[in-house]
Length: 245
Image (cartoon, rainbow, N blue to C red):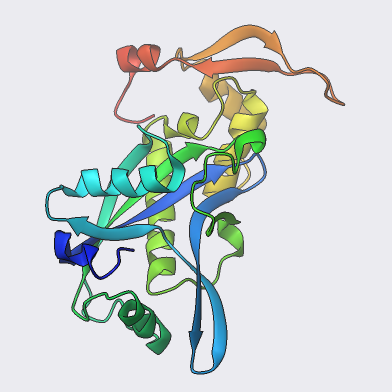
């Protein structure tokens, strides 16, 4: 969040918050900012979504892309606007949230936030390599039960939208490396949807998708029978896409 001097260049009534999802072949993660503060004699270490007030010279999408760039150093991240939240009490559910806003010079006024979700491939070897802010960390979505402000509600809403989008278009490939096995793809769907899928039916559906392309390469150094790798052809999808993925 900006300091008091920089607030002169920000719109005090409009912000963006970003729900950054990542998948590590075991769980769905979200990238959060750790907030450390002292309030009423106690130390608090809680988590919040990355976000900022919108600058006066930028539109909403540009502001969200800036937040992600400052957080990860990455450009061209998959980004979707999914909601606008404007409850008059959304920032002051807890007194320490209000105190934190005062401490950074945030105006004590109603702020409408426009929420985005984004998808990042966090291959286990690269999971933290690109994170630029020392107070940012990946957390398992399934293990979160409280966030600062109304951010848990925003996260839950983002997850619901992600689950719907997952069934309509091939956004799953934004979370996967360029080459993947069908087992890894099924695991991703199961983790996000929160339910087991029948292996035979899942692969039968995939067989009818010409944009999921088999490549001449298999897994190595695995304790089980090596699986064949596949890749997603965006060009092939654009040629054959339908209303329902």
